[in-house]
Image 1 (spheres, one colour):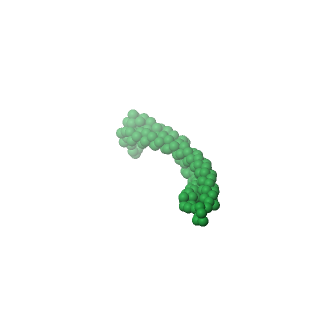
Image 2 (cartoon, one colour):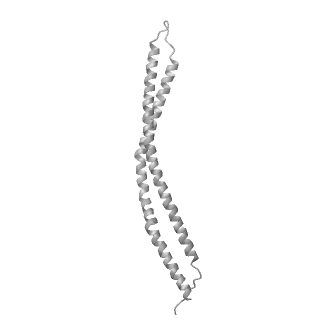
Image 3 (cartoon, one colour):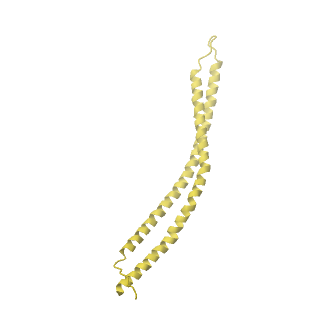
Length: 159
């Protein structure tokens, strides 16, 4: 006894195939976008390092100038009393805080310049696997579905 299949439509398979191909296109676009963002991030970190190095130089100059101005003011004598150096001390504290902030930011930037490439490596393995599936396996799956739908269509026409 040969059981007969009762196939009325292959529409569901065609919808699945279309959804699979749509997903493939979107996934490829997403992988490309991530790749661009990874490159942008590396460039941005390099720019930030240069920026904070410049800020450190400027802040060091500001500290040097503030110290020089404070020393100059302390050397002044107004009668027998010491000169008021509050403004110069505030300027020195501001310059020192600016320098400390810039040094902290540069240290954080350098940390991420070292850590980010390691994180990228963790991402790249699975991303390459997905890329392979999208470029090699999905076309095979789509061809398989097309072959089966054609076979089912031929079967329907004989019955």
